[in-house]
Structure formats: structure tokens, C-alpha cells
Length: 206
Image (cartoon, rainbow, N blue to C red; front, side, top):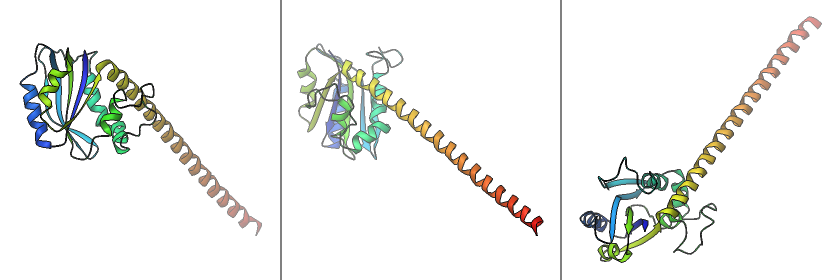
């Protein structure tokens, strides 16, 4: 099964150690890790500390293409900042998923656990048995969140649409503000011209 695995570390140094150990065990009989990144959450952004991509991948694509980069971009982008800033109080996103932790939105679940300075591993995996990869990580103080790549791909698509809608709404708002600003300037100019004209007429009445 293709999964997105997020491993959040309570001890920063363990994140680096775990990344190294997973990188030494990328291909096993029961699992394969084609892409992964070690990231740190700081000031609402994800900083990539280290990354790995299997040479068998073409142009960084796997599981439909671009999922890995899109996911990291969303968590570290404006929507991710809103989600993490509200500790997972998502604006109705991924409402089709159950609210319990096992099946809830990956972004909602991850962002609710990201504190300032948190280090995490985000990886795409193919797993026949989840226990095998977990056995490498169980000695560390971690929170492991695993979702199917298909579910995450659907969520990423939904968030991308949300971002496009937000951008369109912002552009419309800016255009409306500019239009109103222009109307206000024109009205002011008309009032000034009218006042000048009335003052000019007043001179002749005298």
C-alpha cells in the first residue's frame, strides 16, 4: 500500500538520527521509501533540513506525480500557516473524512501537533507491512501519522482548489477596493471643480 508517513519527534536530535537510519534501510522486502524529507517547523514555515529521492523516480514524480512536493508546500504555505496557527481548527476542510484521529485530515492532524521548533520526517512509502518501518522508529520518542497516499492526494487537490479560490477572492476584493478608491477620487475631484465653478460664478454676480 502506498502511504504518506509523517513522524514527529519530541527530541530534535532524534529526528536527525532517525532520518539517517531510515535512509540506510530504504529498500526492504516489505517496504520501500522513494522520497522523504527531514523538516523543521519555524515561524509558520517548513524548513527542509535534509531530503532523499530515489534515483528510480523520473522528474521527482511518484504516486500520480508531484504529491510529495505539493504536500510540503501546503504545510509550509499560507493554508498550512492558517491550519497550524489554529492548531488544526480547519475551516471545514476535508469534511468528508471522519473526525477521529485515525481517519481525519492529514494536514489537520499534523498541524495540530506542530509546535515551534518541531522536527519531523515526511515520507512517501510503499508498505506491505507497516510494522517493519515502525520497528526502525519505535526506539525514538515520536508521534507517527500514516495516511494512504490516495487520501492525501485528494486532500492536496482540495487544498489547492481552496488556495485558488482564496487568491481569486483576494484579487476580486483588491479590484473592488481600487474601483471604489477611483470612484472616491473622482467624486472628490468633481466636488472641487464644482466649488471652483461656483466661486467663479460668484465673482461675476458681484
